[in-house]
Length: 193
Image (tube, rainbow, N blue to C red; front, side, top):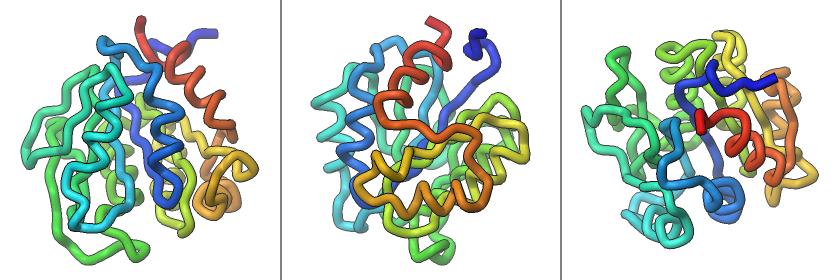
């Protein structure tokens, strides 16, 4: 059964070990990938554009750091800037917030996932990868409750298993997959290619 007509956006959250995990699932995506992908990677405020530059060197698809009020377009990977929460507005534009830390993080995965769930509902895919805290579990649960597809990286496959394990323990993950399986799903199931 093809899932591809159901989905309009993908959100990904990761923390410790995230760069390698992101490369593992993003580097094979074609430049004309049919969905927008929004990412929160926990990082320090002084890291500026380093994550985007490293990923762009390995990926064909365009990678951007989010700008305030930017309209979401297909075929682009958007990354939350350091030290700002990333939210999706009902008109499918981004907003940035310097509200207090959530789960010791800004940007917070929960903030992105919860706002995306309210906008995209059942047409959203949420993916939670390696990390060393519980950020993302509540957000992934919000996506599940909104009818979206929720995926957690297999803790045995994660460099830091705590974050995906917290989501699994909360009953938020519909699928638990290795990175290679997530990459396959992104290429074969979610894209309209």
